[in-house]
Every structure is written in structure tokens, then in C-alpha cells.
Amino acid sequence: MTRRQFLSTTLAAPFAGGRRPPNFVFILIDDYGWRDTGYNGSTYYETPNIDRLARAGTVFTNGYSASPVCSPTRAAILTGKYPARLRVTAHLQGATNRFPYTRVLQPNARLELAKQETTIAQMLRGAGYRSACIGKWHLGAAGNLPTHRGFDVGLAGDEAGSTNNFFYPAWKKKIPLDGKDGDYLTDRLTDLAVDFIHTSKDRPFFLYLPHFAVHTPIEAKADKIRKYDAKPRNGGQNFEIYAAMIESMDESVGRVMDALRQSGVDDNTVVVFTGDNGGVSSREWKNRPVTSNLPLRAGKGHLYEGGIRVPTIIRWPGVTREGSSSDEPVAAYDYAPTFADIAGVKTKTHFDGRSLTGVLKNGRAIDRDLFWHYPHYSPQLGRPSAAMRRGNDKLILFFEDNRVELYDLKNDIGESKDLAAAQPAKTASMRRRLENWLRETGAQIPQPNPKYDPAREREAGEPSGPVTAK
Image 1: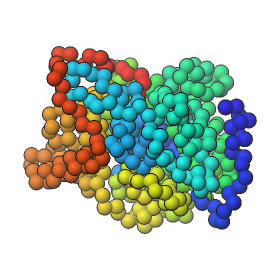
Image 2: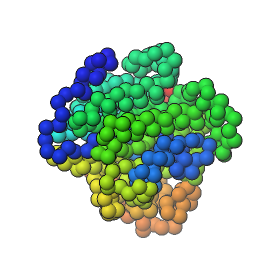
Image 3: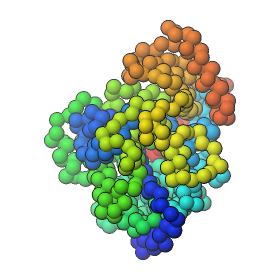
Image 4: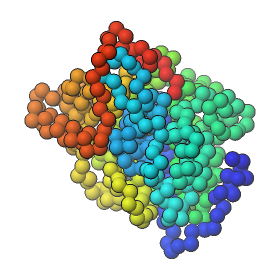
């Protein structure tokens, strides 16, 4: 799509109804750890624009992805459904059973978001919205791209789970997006997002901006790398190139917020900022951890908190209080019902998530449990498992040996003390609920492997070594 074609798709007639409904901007960061922001305690990474957004809205301290890897969370965001129900439970390149000698055989997940599923863009289209997906898609290939799923504009997104390079023209090997020599991909996506905002200001719009940053490859601008190379390290957050990537991503957030103000739509735009899964704390990139999620346990690819708790900010002008925070547990599958509720869209779509409007307006709690299902072996050494959170209690079921672990997140956010043996009644009750949920959603369960061979367990997929596409 040329720039002229791109702009022409946004210059349609203004909204012809009564009161104009709010716009929505959804900024999704790839592999972004819960502690990788200044507002949440990082002193090495610099995120002044994200911190400013946090001060302008509500920070959810218990914000969660729908999965410890990317594609399932993206599917949940767009549909409001559990990945288990959608059967999009792995990143697309890891959706098939690649490990023939593991203790259990992981099920084959779907390789795309099923066409019968309704996306946020499709829900909002009937209310007069224009929608753009600018960035990583990773929910299907030709015939199932953003413009086939309700988006009027789809740029840079196809089946690719990552770029091969963050600089143009090298990114053209995997990312279908033009640029100028030396362009940095995060900046280029932001240029397009800003254009969309400016040219869509006269009608309701939905901008979905799923960045490729801060996913591997870990690459950044030379001047920013030098800045962080000279800065004192802070424990496990000590990778200067990753810090430089975060700064460019943070600048993108600032530019998007500036564009909303310059276009005069800032006061009528709901902004969501979050991540698709936890930060990479394993030795996946050049045999070194990318970041540290401490005090959370583990990271991407695991159902411990480090793999699924993510930065979460919602700013709804006139509703959310500036500088507020909420301890209410929320998850990626809550966004679609929330947007439909705010926009006044009537839909027959079944949502597993809940609208957050009551939480945002008056802090009303949601009486429900949260669930996760990841029946796969992850490149970060995660094991096939499922989990649930009820109040402050969290239960994890491991499919390989059918054991469970129980944690009190209020008093043990690092999940260091397994309480399953000490609290058998609670453990049994939560396990029954989790197993019932797995049946209710039709979740695919790993099966015992008759060819299990511990000496050959890691053949055919190399989950313990570097993996470039997720």
C-alpha cells in the first residue's frame, strides 16, 4: 500500500450519528517485562513517556497477558476469548508437536485465528469506526491478515512473529513495509500510526499498534546504545542494547500521545498500554538473558508470574483518575468486551473476558477467576501447564507429571513457597475448578508419549537453545 492509498482509506465521511463515541488506541509491546518500566521500579531503563501515561490514567498492578507467549495473547485481545477456547495456544511457529521424545506430546494448536471469530475491528466497524493494525499481526497468513479481519488499514503485519532486522532495508526480508535507508522499524511504525491519527480525527477510530519491539533481535540505534553503555547497571537489568530499544519504544508512546493532542482528540480517546507476555529472562538471545523480571519468578514461556504479569495502563479521559492504580486482576481477554461496552456496541459474540468499565469508573471488583492454558514446551524451557488465579491464590497444574503448585501472591509475589501440601483443601478445590474449566473450554491436553526418551528429549525443536521466531 502506498502512502496515498493509506491516507485515502482514512479520509471517509465524518461520523454521521449523534454524540461521537470515543476513539481507541491500543499499544501492545512484544516481550515487555512487568518491571521494564520506570513507574514500576526500573532505574536502568528510561521510560518517561510511559511513566507520563501512567500518571494520566490507571495502572493495573495485577495486569496479565492471556499466555506466556505472543500469538495466544493477541488472539485473546482481539476476540475477548480464552486462547484455550480458540485453540490458539502457541506462537504460530511453535504450534505443532516438534518434540517427539518428550514426556508428553503437546497438542497441535491452530495456525491462525479462525475466520468465524469476530475481532474488535469487526465489532466497531458497524458503529462507524475506522480501524488500523500497524505492526505485528502473527495470527495468520495470506487470506487471514488484518484487512480480512475487519481492519480498514493493515501495515507491516503478516504471519511473521518477529523481524529479522530493525533497520531498513534489511527488515524487508520478513516485514512487508517500505522505508528509507537506515530507518528504525519502531520509528517507521510510529510514523504510520501518527499519520492515521491525524487523518482519522473527524470520525471514530481504533488504532491497534502492536510493536515488534522489544522482541529479538536485540538491535537499537548506536547513539542510544552508547548512552546506556555508560550508565551504571542495576542487577539483572543491565543490557545496554535492550535499554536502547526500550527508549525508542518509549519515544513512540510519546509521539502517539502528542498526535492525539495535536489532532484535538486526546480528550475523547481511550488509550491502553500493555505487553503480550513477560520479559525474556532465559538465555535465549546470544546465550544471555535479555532482562530480569525480579521479584517475579521466571519469564516468557512460563506460567509463573514473570511470564504472564505485564505492564498495564488504561487512560479513559473523564473516567479514570490521574495517577490512580488498581489491584484488580485483569487479563488480555477483557479488552474486547471493554471496548464494545464503552462504544455502546451490541454484539452476539460470546466473551470469556469481562468489561472493565465498572472497575475504571468506580473501582468495582469483578468476581471471577483468571485462567491460563499453555500445553506446550516453550523455547524458554517452560513446561506444558495450566494455571488459575482466585483472589490472591494461584494454582499451576503441570501436565507432565500431573502435579500442582499453590502460591499466595499477596505474601509471596516471587512464588518461592509452594503451599500445595500445607493447604490440601484449598489445593483440591482450585484443582477441581481448573480441571472443570479445561473441560468447559474444550482445552487440548497433552497426552503421555509412548516414545518418551529422556536422553533424546530435546531433539527436533531445540527449546533449550536460541530460537529466532516466536
